[in-house]
Length: 627
Image (cartoon, rainbow, N blue to C red; front, side):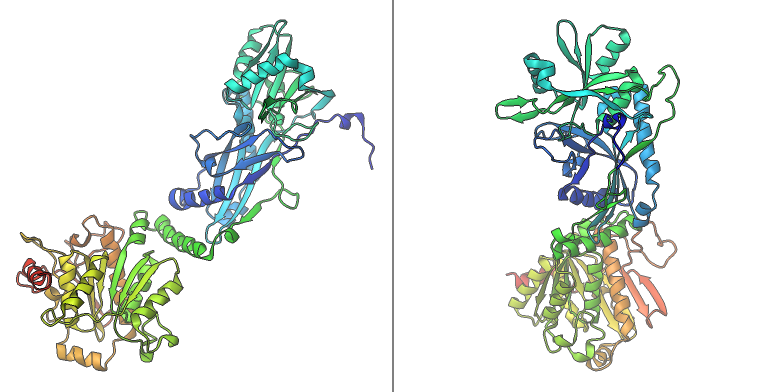
């Protein structure tokens, strides 16, 4: 082992910071990334804090918590807390974080400190000497965070040396000093760095800006102590903040030997104790010196400051919060992230909250119904009521995508609801075994009341029936409650999608869009042909997927239009063709023939004599079933 020389025995050593991030810090960062930062990877100001240590042999810790993002809010005090400005750089990709030029970023941070020393701006805000660089990448799907923390320190060309032994606070300042520092501590928000000037008659405590004025004015003082709030818990070694403070003292005021007060006040029940504070003398000869008459700062010396990882080397650390969150919470966060990524990259106007709170009622859980529900799940809808009275048939398992072999013979509504909860357990899904009345003239009052209750408590109604007469009563009730209503009807290799125009009101409404029956003309087959299809013939399998996708996309557009289901209807006409909305066209009807051979957008206004969507029809319905 190499023998110690007098030189290296006297080298001044500093206890580095060990950064600590609370779980609440990462949770707040995740929330801000999702809802505020999104894909904006600009640097941001946050704050950490450290305090004087009340316990021996505890590492000097620099804390980050949820309050770190509240840049205008003062920290809560416990003992002494010093705010530390930190530059947060949150990368969008793992590769961006891994390949970033971290050393260049740390050097730029150090250059800002060095420039502040030269122009004197650090005297106004001494916390800049403690500036932190915080680089991070948040994998929000896995709740895993990688980060790299640097606390830049400027290295003196010649190492700092201790002179003599440390002197206790009591020995240096006595009872008078206790009183003066105690009063200063009680009356002020203690700055991280300050100066104590001793004259022939008194001891005065000054901030660095005032000391700078006194020094350059040539005012007399017999002794000066440069003090800093010391986070170190070691008896003989000061904390990391002293490094840049010594550079300031040497370069700006050209001291070659200084007395440093390692100020470690501790609050106790009996008052404030300074017993852990001490004074050490430091030789600054050969350190950095500046000529303040120059126009710009000299070239910055070497720097250091990266926090070491678990292996004791410079490199990123990783924290995995997945173990702290329930599987359901992780699933919910992953789905929300997918929706928000769509908003960040494609649809900045996407109202995630509106879709999440939307309550959707789906009649008929067949091929179209299953695919509509899956499409709504993809858009982040979380509230479903699924209605059907039929059972799952083995022959339909390939088309009805919410069912598997174990569901055969069971009620479709219940099975579909269970499948939705298995896909995403955080949604609310209810299955209702209910046969929709096929005629207002023949249906029972009790059934109408159930139907009314279902429609009234939901925001969006999907009518996806196989037979034309099944649309009758739900159309009247959804019109009565003025709900967003979308009907889908399949016919062999064709389909029709209609968005209903809503409640007419007492005085009528010009150009009100028609309901399903207003639009049902000669486009589709006769009722005999429909019955033939239902009794044996099938649709082409892709029809239900195409029609359900278009129906869901139509709803998304309506939700984001200020007029909702009363929005102007777009058509194929060039005059009406308006793609100003990023959510696409909002047609009244979408008619697809022979799968995708032709796709027509059509508008039909409500008929004056319609038996299902006029004020006369709803009035007759109320008089019959609400009397």
